[in-house]
Image (cartoon, rainbow, N blue to C red; front, side, top):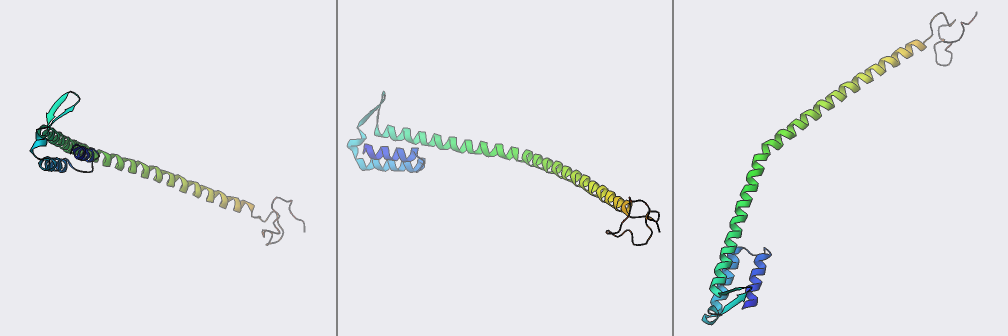
Length: 154
């Protein structure tokens, strides 16, 4: 019978059964053992106790563990409920700041592209020949451009 009780306590310790289930199993083991076992004394460390005392102590212990677990769970849940608005506010702030930075980057990039396009347009206009450097109308074709050369003589 002692081995069965230890198995029940190990199952409880490992979390495979609840405290109520352990108490019921221990109670059933006690009833199955008959009156002789109820009177048997156990010695563990420096304490002597009978089967009923053991069952009562296990039952109280399991109730205390369940109560602690319930209280702890409620406190953790309450803490997260308190922190949730703060997390949401922080996330919103981070997203707003990120959006602002992205907008600023987009504006800067657009301005840079616009400036580059204007410079390229101006550079293309400067490359085109004017009447002073070429003697025919098609001198500004890519192959025949005379810009930068001395004016052609007729």
